[in-house]
Length: 296
Image 1 (cartoon, one colour):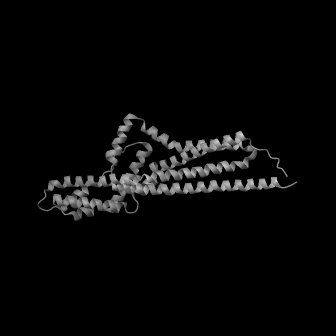
Image 2 (cartoon, rainbow, N blue to C red):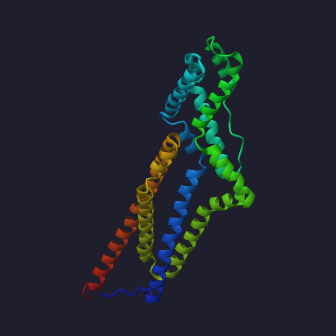
């Protein structure tokens, strides 16, 4: 018995494959840009990276080393000063740092760097001074300690990012560029919908065959994201950042881990959806073939 359904012509199938390639490209661009925008602008991710497990503890340990070194040079007891640098205060400073970074990335606005309150440090330094240290030095020592704490919480950011952003704003419309970057995922999604719609129009006479093209695009997008992630991490960006700043490297590692989980979930979903569509199409094609081969 021979089926009588209308077939899709060869030019239509060829154009559908071209659209499938474009759909894969647009969908990959949309999802990769979404992951990048999330990594740059997500307040929740930056807050988690800044206040994650061990962040405040490692910062506190590094600051205590600075206190011991300064106490040895300037002649004061470090214990009271260490007690004044509480873990809760460091966590609050990290929250402010995350908010500062998020505003910089989302709006291009360089706010004033949050400052550590040096008044309590000055009192602790004065209380720990011995007779060899002059009282008027307490303010200078406290200011130096506060600056060291800020550098631990804001590694490289004040000296590089804020000054670099101020320079860039004098040369270009940074706020407009950031808005355009944040629109990239939506633009990629719109183009993906357009390509998917054109595929559906071309294959309207045999709509079930569109599963082959949609499945190929979904699986191809998943493989593209996977390959991009492998290439990115093979460059070891965390190690390069850690060479400049160990603290910033740890925060980048936490943020990269969150992006990896999100990207991994998206990749698995796309691969599963793509292969599911291809399996359905193959089963349908096999059934059609068997029906065609049956004798009258």
